[in-house]
Figure 1 (cartoon, one colour):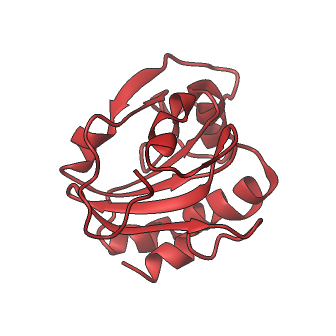
Figure 2: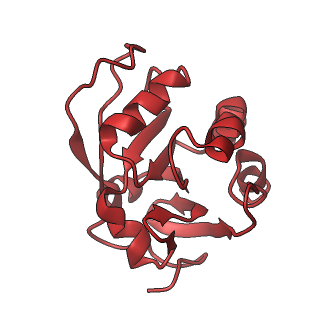
Figure 3: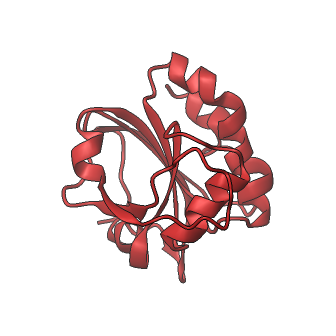
Length: 166
């Protein structure tokens, strides 16, 4: 498969791993990773799935995740139930990244695309990392799917770019 586009059904059997948030922002409290059935969950929600090359990396931290933190209420007002960040990092690193950004609940989840299984299936990887992309899934249907191919750009995948398409 080469990418996803508006109008496509979100693929079956897509799973990620994550550590459910507990409200504890201590980044050294690891938690237990569990599987998240994205295909099942996305069938009944409006979700923004955001892939980044890596947790704590310059653009991902300084621009990308902060755009979603700043615009979360605007996304909710447009009917978004959840924002999910994925990367090739393991679920403990992703959980620590969420905690480091003050996320205490499930409004934004931080997950691992373990082995890049999903990103590889849609052809949106670069080496051992995901490309920077955003996919909006509304009750199982893709309504937006874009990649930012310019290094450091979040024009298509940052919260502002996604909001403009909702």
